[in-house]
Image (cartoon, rainbow, N blue to C red; front, side, top):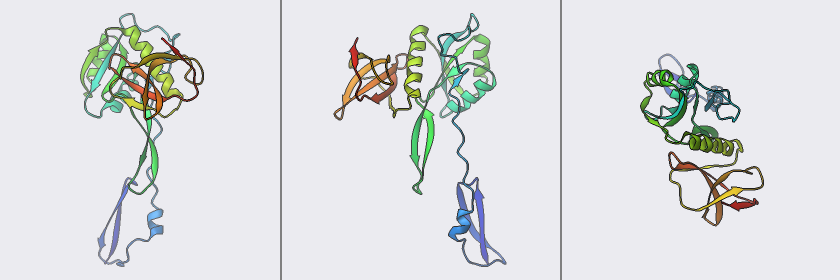
Length: 222
């Protein structure tokens, strides 16, 4: 009797007895020879890349900003399908560092606003998106200019690559504008937590956002 090893996508190994083979279990070297599953590159969370730019090409006259609320954990699936169909969208992803049971760490990118994908679509594109079977419902945006401003601020905050904390509920605080540093020009709410000041940048439509710790910056009250 011997051991049979079955590798499942490089993530786990199941061992069982195999007739006619030696009974010695696999060595650590044999385990090490199993190639780990490669980490996929970050999925684009914005399409097209200049969707939020001030000088972005004009969309169809009937295009409007809306929010798709997805089925559970289907945000990235919807994003892939929208990109394949050339339907504009933005669903900000932020980096999270995860630790495996074996002690290894890896970076993963997760939705900042779970369940929500913002899209700039006309009626035909909206119907095409709804046909992907990833959407529970869609929500109209009352103030599109405010949404676009908020999404631009969120994207700029993410692009700084500073450690961010999702904010599921926006706390009251002092409205400010950052005057110096990498966050210069960003506007948000300052709150104090655990002895440190944090700047919260919100998407007002959701009353959610992200925050970053403030260090050595000048602030202007609004």
